[in-house]
Amino acid sequence: MAERRDHGTLAHRKPIVRLKGIDICRSVAIFLAMLSHASIEFKLFHYTGDSLSLLKFAMPMATPMFICLFGAMLELVYARRMLEGQTSMATSRLLVRAGQCYLLYALAILARVAVGDYSLGFGLRCLLLIGATPYSDILKFYCLALAMAPLLIALRVRFGLGRVAIAGMAIHLAYPLLSIIPPPPLIAGKDYIGMGTRFLVGIGQSDVAGPSLLHGLSLVFGGMFLGRALIAIRQADRQLSRRGWQALFALASIFVIASLALWDWTDPVGTAIQTTDLTLRNQNNPLYTSLGLATTTIAVMLGTYLFDRKGIRAMDWIRFIGSVSLFTFAFGNILLVLQPFEVSSMTSSVGLFLLYGSLMALQSYLFYTIMRTEPGDASGLLGSATRLVQGITERSSAVIQDATAFLLPAYVKLLGKIAPKIEGAMTISQATQRKVQREGVA
Image (tube, rainbow, N blue to C red; front, side, top):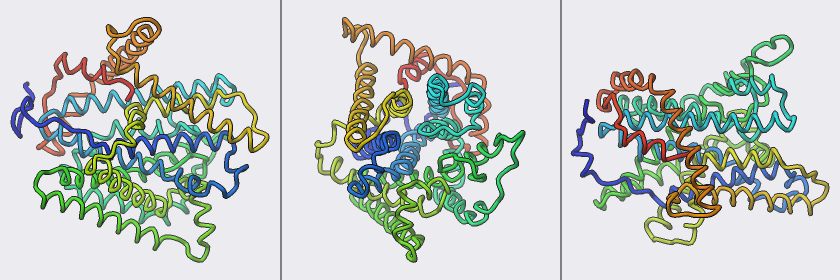
């Protein structure tokens, strides 16, 4: 069955233009997250105290920011493709990305087992998504979020963005109830169930980093709202563009007011500490989500104005990090897991923090360069590395695509039943398959 073209032929549709402001915000958020992991690994704030307070407060905002921007990209890119009849291609791409996340998550677990941090048994539990994995839990989150993304888009198309966003925010109304539900019982003295329930819905006392998958959906839907506003801002019609800016300003105002209302003013310093030490995040506290949405909305407003509207290019250099986000998360964290150093002073703490921050950025840049180099255009070491890395990436993507192919027709059919507007083709051309495979670990 041919691809449906409800909104004009796809060959003549306007190309999806990347927004520099979004790319830069996303890259900054990812790099802040990696620096946060490095600061924990090398005990940076233990030695520096309050001298880096601003950085200490900014780092916890990285997680809600890139989850929120993930939602924005669903609205900007994938919802558009699905509404244009490319449901199969978009769904296949998202499933391949989900599979890539899982493979990279598995590599991070194997690194932990290799250095003796985890036993083989606990490593297997982690691979079943019922373990706790410091630094790498975001890959587990993204794996499921990407697999669910077509369904989230279908619900958004069927019920409207406002309704699904309200449903996502309503999750936080249950915070008082969820916080008092006792954790699942231990089995043979081990927390086999609690780590899974903590990750999925935030119930349990296990050391599993937040936000849970359930609570993270509010950030995804909040990001879709941002994406919708950005679509309006990009329009040539000044009135529509103005409405987009007004929507962003309204969202920022709502989340700033909500954050001020949720802040514990009887102990403002203690609340700030709970924000920086990730207590609020791991509790799935509504204040953390509100702060994250406020920060993201303000950052997107500034980024869009400075880098898209005014054309400032001073931050263009950092955009590569957002282009290889999965690689950065996986191999940046593996670099930290494998590091052999012991920290014993402020000098060693700051020095190792800066060193590993630079190494994580460098290896991501090398991967970015390799993935954008044509094998025939490079020789020597770069040519060999390009052929090897691109070959591995394409083969792994092809395996994932083949492994998920049997799910695709049923998944697309389900999406069509939920939202008939996005019913698309049941098959994917070979050219599209190659395109999906080549896009790699981005």
